[in-house]
Image 1 (tube, rainbow, N blue to C red):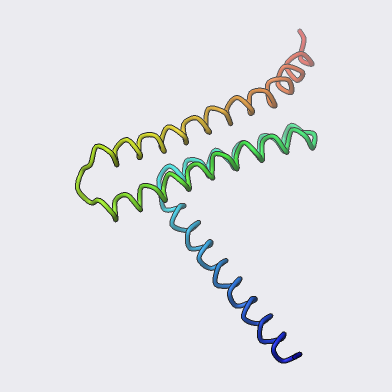
Image 2: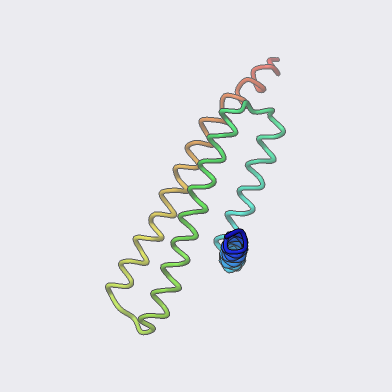
Length: 134
């Protein structure tokens, strides 16, 4: 009985390791995309700027959620494009619509993240500018 449980546990661990490997491979594939690199630069800049302003935990949470939504949208867009290109290599108006909608989702997520960034950063910036009254 114990041997069976140990074998099952080992099988489970090996399966999880394999799953994480696939996920890491997917993230590496995503990072090879130009737009993902732009998102990476924006993410680093936003978090560095936030660190310089001394944000509160709620503000960090909002920025993290906004960045995550953009990254998830970009990942899904990349996956849909890869699947579409592999399935229908020639131009298809239906595939074009699907790709456009997925790209639009990334745009919406990005605009939402910009709105969150403005809501978080503008009060800090106006407080700092007000501190420099002439």
